[in-house]
Image (cartoon, rainbow, N blue to C red):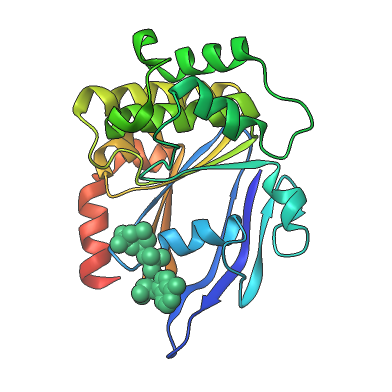
Length: 236
Ligand SMILES: Nc1ncnc2c1ncn2[C@@H]1O[C@H](COP(=O)(O)OP(=O)(O)OP(=O)(O)O)[C@@H](O)[C@H]1O
Ligand SMILES: [Mg+2]
């Protein structure tokens, strides 16, 4: 479960990046967050990872308030950033092994790593290659493999399809669908209105730090999400 309760973040100079935002993402649901540049999407994600502390309200992962017990909360959540950071001189398998083993007493077995990479959709011939030559989509697959190995019940993705080729983006959607079926709670920030409409159980539209509207599956099926978004920007 991913939960925002009246979540608020002020930066200096009177900037309220996130303003009393509330939502709940139960296990097995995908929540999409849309909104223009500067709407507060990435800031919202950062609050769930304890990269920054809320000014008011709370971010809760699997019942654990992030700002109160950050270490415990972080055991339940994985971030897939737009650009996945990996060690360039290590292979895909070595990277996933390393990042999946962080904070654990025992090293993760090779076989589990390979299975996760396979599920993440990396071509097997790339498993033992150094990642320095990897494309953006291949790096993302390695990042996703880490969250598969770690079996995080909550996964956060920040603009996961930006810069991916259409096939890689479609693959990612299938993968996220599978994670949802396994009961993972997923939060995706994206500018990709059409994929959000296809994939998400609910979509929220943010503007200037506030959540302007949330559409559920029925509303998504009935509405032209792009038009709703554009109206929100014009009048919301
Ligand atoms: N570390 C920071 N210090 C000061 N202001 C910040 C900081 N991080 C974000 N902001 C401000 O908070 C607001 C929200 O930014 P945020 O990055 O969350 O937007 P976003 O919705 O992710 O936008 P984009 O679609 O461009 O990624 C912006 O006004 C931004 O300038
Ligand atoms: Mg952002």
